[in-house]
Length: 538
Image (tube, rainbow, N blue to C red; front, side, top):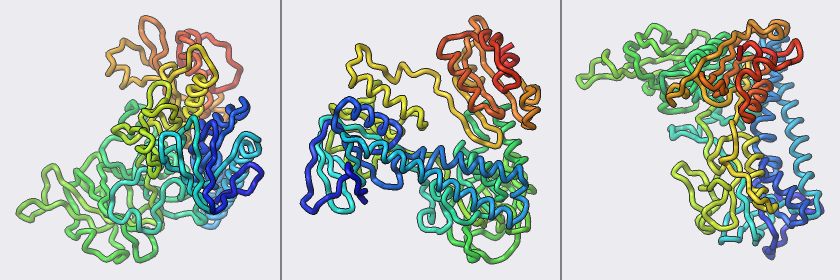
């Protein structure tokens, strides 16, 4: 609904029309930064946000910041031993959720007033859709508001991609990351569908809280885009935290279990042995037969199911896929069926640009084959005076990219002789906040080899870094790729404590075209993790 403040709209029943210089659809990082800049330049701005719960955008409300708040609380629970008993686990989780809600509420309020309190900005709470090239209708709780704007900026972000699995939309206990971060009670067992970095962050977090976590991955390789040694180190740490992995696993159906949990029917390719009773033939929640699938002959599937239903997801009722004559098939491709019973399911299968309901065709705005708003290097859409910023345009899904998108757009609006473009953007870093953070920038070894580059690999165990020992965080490795003849830094992968800070030093060196010897010889303070770059690039 609309918020009654001096600069918000309280919509009368007569459907008012507003004419403004700029309309920004979505309150994300790029859009809100652009709104403030336009306002400071004396231009009238309308910001349309579909939900009052999303003032400030995804990162503040349901993304980076609330998840990091919970991750830090989970790490504290692990360090304090608060994850050791059901009572202490519940108390730690309850406190973590309370703190997360406090932080997000505070940031949401600050972000709202940062815009709404400006004379030139009007915030309207409602879902917007195009009615023409420069016209939009916003459906508010009090009725529609028509907005005509000279320039329009689409900043609607992305939404979780939900696979087409029977029961996934209707079964209680199935969540996206948004819902899972707002539970009142901690699940004792959690199954995560998807082993990308979002899924792994949640696996690490809930394992630290004391939840028994099982991750399902549909193919055989863990983190297939990462170097094998890095992926192996990440997987080893997650398994040390208690996370179980089931590879080559496709979820075929999801349904309520009789005990109030969730039952998944999972097909595992490559399995060549199993019981004869199919998952779907057994009523939900009946029986306590738990099949140890480590006895199957597949070598790429690993997990450690137990007979304790409060431990990891309960697995039962295995069936190999029969051959044409009805006999169990023992030659590839075999397929075993499992029932997994759990308390909660996280669907972490990626995010897709949020364009539903925008009626972009009314404005002449086209989409890419992947469903993102089609933009050029200046983030201009296929319609004149309409731009798209942030996740909705199909670029890297990071808050800092949305902020950089603002720079691309603003450089066109402020009279710059040469606007800043997407092609000018250099070396986008990323960090995944596991128990040991993993950060990288540039090419890894796999990519450098595929590109035919002549390179040298630099490696350093984190255990060799004095500060890591002092912090009692010696796990992990550092790895860098350096062009052999030029000394140019091609990329770095840091699986290390404080890697999310140190990776920015490497990015800066790469942006400045500094050779590896610059970091090798740089004077750093001591003891720090950053000084490990001296040894890494030696």
